[in-house]
Image (cartoon, rainbow, N blue to C red; front, top):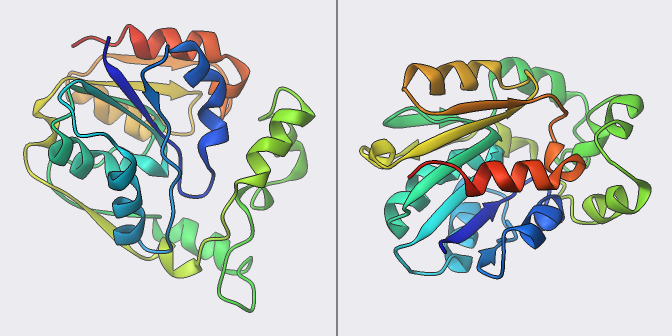
Length: 215
């Protein structure tokens, strides 16, 4: 059995992966992202990932930025991007596109920090992401108020990171461009009809898709 490393977005925390982690077996690691800059976040992930040769990295959302460097440094066996940013084969990727930065700038507080992630969206859209109030509370307790400056940064992908097998799981169409990119690369792609936190609504389906991703 491989060791699954479920990477949550730096804006959220391990609770988003808890139901899936419980179904993937005993050999699962869910690092807690820490830090205000890409370098700090990457280092926090790296400290929590074991040094072994049977890792399957499973980044969600913004954590996709960190998968290339982590996969290369830890000799990951394969990657499963889940509704995540998909970096290029090499080069830098912006944490957030300029249009998204403009949309969030007005939400930034006097301290230069963004509100928690669930405060970015209309209440009815957020309500639909969670299967119940208890799950929502667990996720919201772990949210980070990231500095707006984080959105303006970029993360480097080392050459060769995508030489290993990789799969893309999309939750709806929010990451349609990334899904199309994965298809162009010849990766296996699967789309679940759900929201961005679909792993909370259908942990069994998502866990099975991760476990069945080809090597």
